Image 1 (cartoon, rainbow, N blue to C red):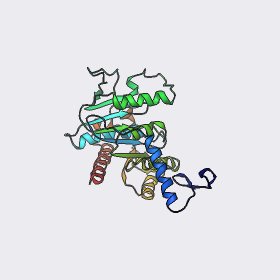
Image 2 (cartoon, helix red, strand yellow; image 1 turned 135 degrees about the horizontal axis):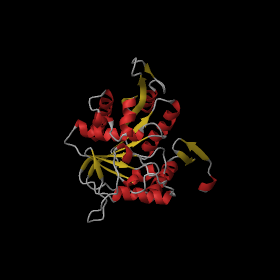
Image 3 (spheres, one colour; image 1 turned 180 degrees about the vertical axis):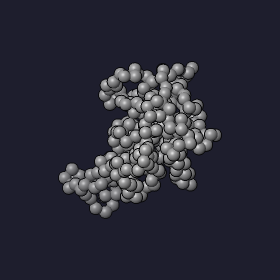
Image 4 (tube, rainbow, N blue to C red; image 1 turned 90 degrees about the horizontal axis):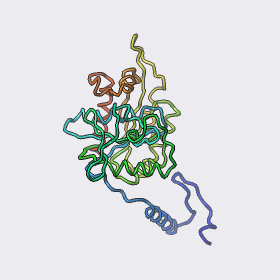
Length: 301
């Protein structure tokens, strides 16, 4: 019987041909070899020791704010470490606003873009290359080309950590980045809300499929504390991300409160970790950064 006449079985990782014995193993190996031939070879970014991606299954959960404050928290926890920030959200770049940066990158003699720097963090974003309010109406191939340039045509110098603010979802950009560069680990950001957690789980499963370690989950907007009476309200639910972390067998890296201070400092381009370093909100981000470093150390053993 030819392969095309064999019945199919559906598994969690896709469709498999129903065969038996050694034939099943041989077929799976052939599929893996065929897939591997079509994948680009991963190449490290020159000068960058470790890449940390910050992702979410959906937009609106505070991923970019978390990525920015994570980068600043990494540097705040250890001043000897150099940290960079890459905004890979081509359609909705937020890093220029969050980091209070404007202008076009200069070019080096090697025709590489020099990152713009604020708060000691070199940053690169598509937002530096287009008008602030200009919509980016591109098809997939143009987006992939832009991502390739952001990955390969930037002079980062020497970085201990490069934090990449990924676009929401599990699409072409995520696959392009994970297949092109070695990634030390992924941080998944979610609110405790059920609908956000569903997408966060998809994001975590995607990274597992492409063999990127999931460092853990960040539960953002975990609780709101009234500034007048200090009463705490769990607007988006209680411990949803903590329960998901347990289900996925990954760590909960920390809780970030829903706080006016975070929103105001972000809108002003003065992230809370640098503008209010002694605040509980800044401490929460630094704790997440410390947990990320600890998880990276555990994975490298």
